[in-house]
Structure formats: C-alpha cells, structure tokens
Length: 325
Length: 302
Image (cartoon, rainbow over all chains, first blue to last red; front, side, top):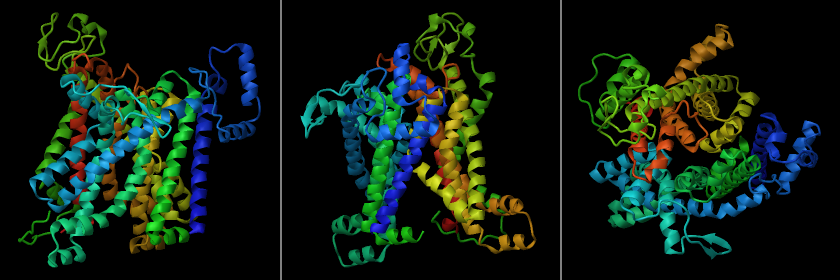
C-alpha cells in the first residue's frame, strides 16, 4: 500500500510540476513578461523595482526557480485590478464556487441515481425511454444555453427566481454560505441545477447501464426467486453493486465541476472564482489568471489522488495492477 | 437490436454495406443523419442562400433593430422570420453564417486532431516500450484535466481568433484519439498478419499505416462523432465566454452571447434561435454517434 501511495503521490507532484512549467512557459514566452506581470500603469521606477523583485533580469532557469519558490510560499503575484495578492482574492471567491459545486453534486447524485436505476429496471417502458431521451438532451444542450433557458423561464417569464447574483449570505463554519437563508437559497437553486444537469445525465446513463448489467447477474435472479420484495432487491442487491463505479465518477467529476462552474458562474453572475477568472481574462489581470490556474490544478490533482487512494482501498486489484505496470 | 432474425443471411455483405444496412434500421438515427446533412448543407451554402449578408453593413438598417420574429422590414419589405438583432441584422442570415463558422472550426480541428492523435497512437502502440509509456503518461496527464479548463488557459494566453480556437481544440482533443487508436492498435499488433508483414520485411511505416491503422478505424469513428459534438459545444462555450472567435467572425456561441444581454429585457429571439440551431446540430450528431457505436461494436453484432 505504501509503495502504491508513494508512487501515486509522485505522479501527482509530476502533474503539478508539468502544469507549473506550462503556465510558466505561457506567461514568460508568449509576450513580454514585464507587460504580463507588471501593471501597465506602473511608473518606470515601479517597473524596475518589480522586475528585480520578480527576478525578470535573471537567466530563465533561475526565473523558473523563483516562480516555483514564490508559488510554494503562496505568492502568485499581485493583481493589477485590485492591487492585492492574487491568491487572497481567489481564496475569498473559493467558498462561493465550492458551495455551488457541492450543491450541484448532491442534486446530480440525488436525482440522477434514482432516475438511472428506474430506467435500468424498465428499459422498454415509456418512463425509461423518456429518462434516456432527457439524458441525451442534457448531454447535448450546451451548459451556458441551458442556464439561459433556466433564466428565461424561471426568472424572466415566471419571475419565481432571481436571474443572477448570490443574494444574502450567512456565516457557517467560518465560511460565507447562502443555502441557510431563503434569499440565498433562491439565488443558489438555478445555478446549481444548471451545473448539475450535465453530470446528472452522465450519472443517469451510468446507473442505467450498470443496473441492467447487475439485473442479469445470478444473485439478483436468486434474490427474486427467493421471494424477496422487489424493493429490497433494488435497494440492497442492485444499488450496492452499482455504487462502486458511480462513486469513482462522482469523485472525478467534482474536479471538473470546479472547471465547469466557470460557465455557470458567468451566466448567473455568481461571484465565485470562475467568474473571477473570466473577468480577469477580460481585464488582462494576468497574475489572477496564473493564480487561478495553479490553484485549480492543485484542487483537481488532489481530488484525483484522493479518489484513486480510496478506490484502491475498496478494490485491491487496482493497487496490484498499478504496482506491476 | 435484440430482436431475433429468422431468415439466415443468403450472402455476406461487405462491412460498409452491413454497417449501412444496420444503421438505417434505427429510424431516429436516420432522422439525426438527415438533420445533420441539412445543417451541413446550410452551413456550406450560407453565402448563396442567406437572405442578406449579415456582416455587410450596407445591407443593415438600424431602423430594423430588435424586431420580433415575423416582422417586415421598414426599408426593404423583406420578412424577418426569426427577427433581427440590435443592429437590424436578420437572424436567419446570422444563424446561417454562424453555423458556417461553428462547423468550420469543429471540422478543421477534428481533422487535425485525428491526424495527429492517430499518428501518435499508432506509433506508441507499434513501438511500445519506453516511448509508449512516455506518450501515454502525457495523454493521461492531459485527460485528467477538464478540456474546458485547458482550452480556456490556452486562449487566455493566446488571445482571440479563429485560428487560435482551432489550435486550442486540437490540443484538447488529440489525446482522445491517441488513446483510442493505441488501445485498438495494441491488440491488432499481436495478430498474425502483422507478423506476416514483418516477415516480408516491409518498412515500419508501411506496416503501421497500411496494415495496422485500417484495422483501428471503427472505434476511431465512434470517438470522432462524440468528439465533433463536443468540439462544437466547446467552441460555442469558449466564444460565449468571450475568449473564442472574434466579433468579426461570430459563431453560434458568440451570437448567443451577444443576444444574452437582451434576454432579460425580453428580446429572447436574439439568443434563443442561435441556441436552437446549435442544439439541433449537436443532438443530430449525438443521435448518429449513438447508433454508430451500436453498429460498430463487435460485441453487439449478431
């Protein structure tokens, strides 16, 4: 187990290093790094001072070393727009994105699994076909357009929900969250559905395919033959066995939800870090872009690592084949 | 698929004929294919069949701005079936031109990504060893990050432009093809006909691309149909976010983004109709792709 863990950790470090090199290359090779990293409105003295502080007058390998050194110390540059450390600004926005992603994940699991199992148990029924048709639609409708339709229907036409923003927030476990007040919840619900729909389609398809497969197995047939209620067969025998692949997907999808939140946050003007990224791209606030990338890479790599480790604990075969390969 | 055919086949069809026959058994897939052909024809023929050139400012009349669907132009008397945008641009024409750019970006990037991915995948599978594991490490690394994130990074650094969007899509997509081709090529490589080709002392290049590659095509086609739908959606998303194609060459995604500002004031048609065109295109491709996956999957063959 320890060998596997060390090996997997090494891979994760490698992934982070590779992304750091790419981001470094992107910032330092494409265009002049002085323009990229220093506020265009800075004075000549400022430019010289910052150039020296960032070590832009040093050879490239030393610059890369400084970039990594600063990054390890949480210094990813200072935002041009806000005039504060880029990382601080992103950390302020992180809870909003995390709240959105977690709520969306709960929605997609809570709705996706029952629908998928239902469609898997009765693949030929009208309900089963409707669910599958809906999931193809959920796959095909681009995320941002789904969001716009939600706004058009529920905010503009029906007027039930606000069209954007985050609404009232309260303090919860040291974080600002919006799901505890009615105002906050009403702002949260549409973006969360928007972010959840794509994953929900994915989970429906996965749950359906696995349910169909599990239903063919002898132990399910046997359970039915034994006269167990179909409720018990589904809840105990089927559900337990379809959960392993679904749990893996859920873990991996949490990372991509953080990335997809960029789109949802932009559509709904949700003040998370995805919206911050798009705003920063439009304002050419490069230090914030760099900081966002490094942080997101770190989050995704950490989630992937966690999922792999949990999975190898659940299923020893993975561990063995990885160690050989 | 599951129904049992009682009549035994009298003769064996060629693979392409069999695939075609099985494909048209599913009516929904045929509808999808027809829709896609129509969409593609509209995109190709847009400059000749569009009621106006939406980017020739001389043909626009600001008096016609933001007309709802079905209104008649004050100046020329033409009917705007899907309304106009703020500049008085006919939405039918704008959608036709937008479709053209969306499909152009998607197909060019698809072609490049397939070519690059296939070559890399075949080479990795054929030579194996360190080269193979090195290439697959890169592929795994890249696929562990969401495509939209990678594309966004690239475009944030490169700036807007049709060529840059294509470049970003190629970089995002090549890994899928490389992995697909490699996994089927690694199975094929062990078969006798490759050994036979080796015994004939054919060059590596000839074996890889004339013997190995043709046998890896079916899974490649399935991945390609899924990926082209993804590419269209991704391009639209990037353009919607404002990092994709420039304003002078708007794709469907950019049209939707432009209309988004007017959505809240009730001018729904400026963003909803381009969106519908986008959705029809993607759904049509996905329907075809779903059916192709069934037809080309050897495990489901009768």
